[in-house]
Length: 66
Image (cartoon, rainbow, N blue to C red; front, side, top):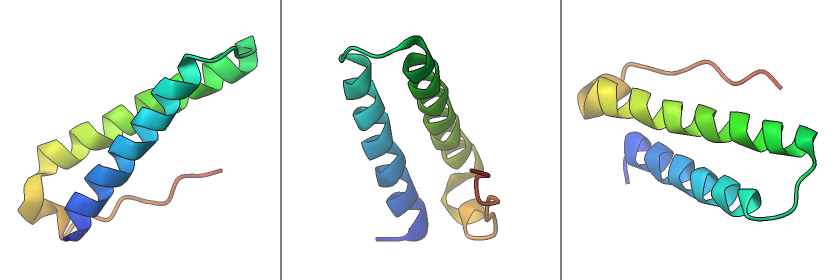
C-alpha cells in the first residue's frame, strides 16, 4: 500500500470514528471538538484527492499542531 492510500484509509477510519461519536451524548464542548475534527479529516481527504497520486509523493503536509 502506498503512502497516499494509507493516508486515505486513516482519514476514512477517523471520519467513521468521529461520525460514531456524534451518535452519542456529548457536551457542547465535546460536540464542537468532534465536529471540528470531522471537518478537518474531510478537508484532508479532499486535499489528497486534489493533489492526486503522483503529487502526493512530493507533498508532505506539516504535522498538526496539538
